[in-house]
Length: 496
Length: 68
Image (tube, chains in turn blue, cyan):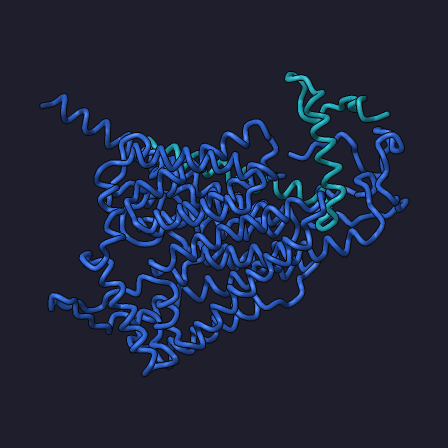
């Protein structure tokens, strides 16, 4: 008996120590963003992204600095303040994405405080959604260069991995299950919710492929490619492990569109086929049975309930064209064919969520944002198609296209219209389009070699090119001896 | 154990990404892609020539196959 008691005490002590170390690790990481933010303010935007994606305040288990302070608000204010005080350079042109996102935020505020069916409940969701929308409208002003865009995407991926990695690993080791608590944070909200996690996990796949091919930040190519491939497998495993039907739709979309955009269709097709065969032959009977319900949705209460809620929404907006404000679903009332009733069933679709909550004007703004994004992707891909120096932008636009299509396809069956991931992807495309526009302008000028670039390691300013000798065309290595340097440039500097 | 491993790895990765992004962003021009290409070529050449015991900042001879 005493031995059991001692073992319990030792285990509790180990858990306390583990929680304390976690809290310290996350607190130091959080403070690190501020430290580097003074040197380069876009680091604070990365910090906000990390806080928003990984929710470190919930992962600290009440230990350390983070659970005691409003982490998101502090770093958000710091990011905006640092931009206005230290970093207002190369601001992008005012574009439709920023305008539409801001208008959408204003409209959401109007519906919440004037039209809401359930004002108190609507205000709770508004408090989250307005921060997402306004911060996303701010992102294009701070994320401008290629490195910043890549850093934004890397942090987006690695923040999400906090939820994807444990689910994927546990699924690979012991199998998943519908409604099983495999994530770091228990509950049914945010990325702890199965279908949302599946959608986001699959959304990461094209971005991981981009990172494996083009990342400037992770420069160990030999290590980067197998790591990214491993993370792709873990993302697929995480999606399968949730047992969500949304995952099946997402896998079809991500696989199909990535194959269409692939330059090596045969190789990618073979890889996709192997993955599909492995899934079919290793998936449990429970997973197969769950997927089979997509064909018999009329007998499945969950699926049929969604269809009935969507019908209710169409009827509701016919009489309330400006929507019912956030969380308007709580007033719905649906009747199943067998006579049973349900009240307050959620929209389970981003399109019906936006329509029911923000009405036709809101849906128009949201659709306009998506249309603008797809047009921007098309513009970027066309303008970079035959330029080897902008191959990264061409591939990144393709990756973001597939990622956006995946989350929009999955989002047709889950209510994530005001979760930040869609808006992050939209803003990544906006930043990329602006960067490519400026790259075309820069390339129209005489080439500036790296020998002409002054390094300013201790300042918060990006390097100002000092055009010593405009060289056109770009000099060969024979013409520029390797030890030749411009003032202040050390040729053997190896970043990182 | 998986949970702690996840937290450790992802946090380390994110901090590494932030630090390296800040350093790279201060070196590379923001919009002209040509110096980036040049840097990448140079990095690849250096990586090929550096010995494992040499620190990353060690000056190394250029790759003579392309230097004429």
